[in-house]
Length: 76
Image (cartoon, rainbow, N blue to C red; front, side, top):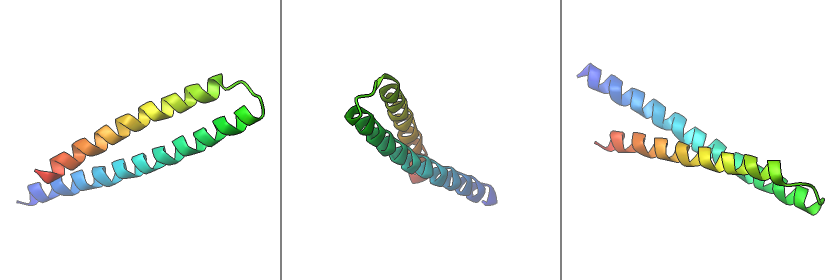
């Protein structure tokens, strides 16, 4: 029985960590979107800023997927 508790505690720890990653990802995306708008208003080249935004969004999708997989394990 202690083994099962340890496994659940570890999964819960990973879930909490994954939740933090999702929250941080949301913040990074919002900040980068603001940078893109600011750069656009200044007439700057947006190529690299948009690439970075796309990378953040792709990472966020993976963070969400990982968090959801952990959540599903916890619900079993």
